[in-house]
Image 1 (cartoon, helix red, strand yellow):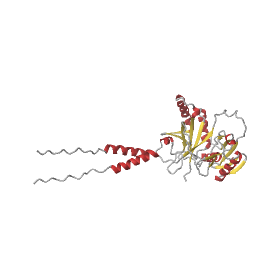
Image 2 (cartoon, one colour):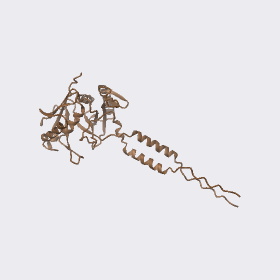
Image 3 (cartoon, chains in turn brown, red):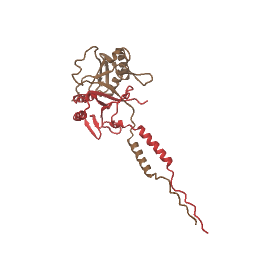
Image 4 (cartoon, chains in turn yellow, brown):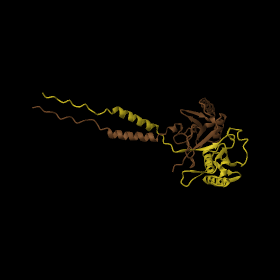
Length: 164
Length: 156
């Protein structure tokens, strides 16, 4: 008698559910992806009102004044009483003047000196960030590390809204 | 005479290369997805500065606040006043005061010292500085003490 051999059961796995889940995951990651450029932070020293009253005045604060025109653009940048002009050149000049005042990059005084930014109410915020950047220091030649001039930067008390 | 019909060719497609590719795509998206950026609002046009480097040490408690303008597609402002953007909500800066106090209460309920909480200010480059300062003053009134201003690195 001839015995017919049974065909072996198919060993192929059912891949459809896996493909479904995989595509759902792919769709999820594609839709949640946000392409955002690298962001960084500038620390500012803002103690609560009254906390700085007892501070020993060993070194006077360096005052940086930012004056705005009616459109909110920078009209004048001053370091103390000295006029530094406007535009990118003014911020570069501010950077080199701060370096002179501090006495060199990463100097011991850099931790003691505090810079006070006094900006007009309507000045666009990007000018303040540029000023903070110019006061903070500069990038090393390889562009990877920050050579710090000062550690402490604070805001002067806010001015009144001219439109209020 | 009996004829045996030849077996039908399999109509099933070979899915292996497609699966390989799909898994590679998933791996790519998983790598580049940063869930830390969920608090980032794309409407805020951050100021740029070369010194804006990402912090080397991760801050444990931070409250990210997005301050910006409602803009049309061409970038023109739809409202002259800036807003604080929350998920699905927009508040004027003075209206955010109660939220800040609420956040402070939440941290205190979690037994987190408010001195350890950093407020990350993501303000649009065109926002008047006085409004950012008013926001910081409001936060100080809510007993927050640490602040950082966020900026973007320039694209080379």
